Amino acid sequence: MQHAWGPPSDYTAAINPSKRTGPQVATLSCLNNPGTSLVDRIRSGDPRALARAISAVENRAEGWSDLLKSLFPHTGRARVLGLTGAPGAGKSTLVDQLAKLYRKQNQTVGIIAVDPTSPYTGGAILGDRIRMQDHYSDPGIYIRSMATRGSLGGLARATADAATVLDASGRDIVMIETVGVGQDEIDIVRLADVTIVILVPGMGDDVQTIKAGIMEIADIFVINKSDREGAERVEREIRAMQSLAARTDRWTPPIVKTVASDGVGTKELAEAIANYEAYLKKENLAFKKNVENWQDRLVEMLRDAMLEKARQQMDAGSLKRYAAEIAEHKRDPYSLVDEIMKGVVRTT
Ligand SMILES: Nc1nc2c(ncn2[C@@H]2O[C@H](COP(=O)(O)OP(=O)(O)OP(=O)(O)O)[C@@H](O)[C@H]2O)c(=O)[nH]1
Ligand SMILES: [Mg+2]
Image 1 (tube, rainbow, N blue to C red):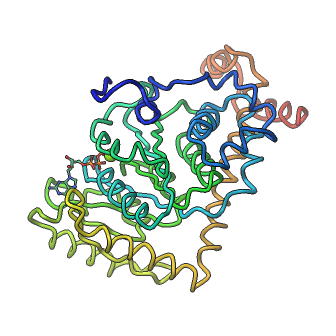
Image 2 (cartoon, rainbow, N blue to C red; image 1 turned 180 degrees about the horizontal axis):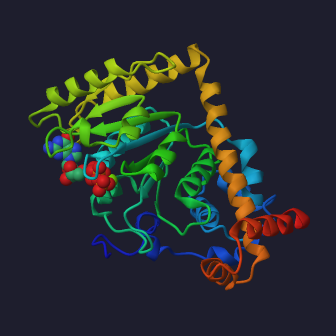
């Protein structure tokens, strides 16, 4: 997609991977020696180093895991906010407003816009994010979009790793925007410290049509576009739902009404976020939540690592060949998996 406002910048590159400039990550020799400059440059917040590092972890370029190993000790300080909701609910507009507010408080911001709707094309429904270019001249805001990748690693993990890079770069706030349409997105926002679910009145976007899993992960509800008719109805529906199922942490997610396009309610939303963070701290829940997140992430990391090893055991065409043999009943899949796993264990 061509944008009208000029030559490829870091920002256009960020929202449109096909225009990414700079060296190809697969041959990044500096990643092979992550103890040196790349890590330092990331930690100093250099946007080019950030772009390189995120591409490297996203594409699993050589050295990606060594890079993350070097960055991990410098993480854990950023406040990670996840924002999700139906397509067009106003997520980007809201992220934009929050970013402005946090910048006024002198906090640095990293934004990851996840676009699960553009599988391999590298960015499609990104036009609405154009307004974020307002921030482009401000080095205190770094914006990056991620599109769905192939199966290995998965989008949720790539997003988590990108958040790790931003955290290590010293960003005070990391916001992750994703369309709330499926399990992948639930996994993505779950890695956030605070999850904000954005609903809008009308348009059939009432509570019933939002995936149940998404409603459950909300720490804060936003009813955006509350300049439109029906905001009260959405609020009643959320309340009705909340009365049915109490949370184990006894937090009742507040409902904040916003008109993101006019900046209305942004301050209240930031307050709701701060309140929830204070609650987590007071009840010592932040640590517990973190442990739970890492438990899930570890399982995924192990699964990925084992799968990768298993793939290394097989040459390119063998999966298909095995599958054909199983379909023809020449082989049983259970013994095959045992056999491959034995190979995996031998090589580790
Ligand atoms: N009336 C009204 N329009 C709004 C409001 N907030 C956002 N919009 C408009 O809604 C449209 C979609 O806003 P976005 O912020 O791009 O929505 P999004 O959820 O990020 O969209 P996707 O990323 O494509 O899923 C834009 O035209 C916004 O100007 C609001 O509070 N009221
Ligand atoms: Mg958006």
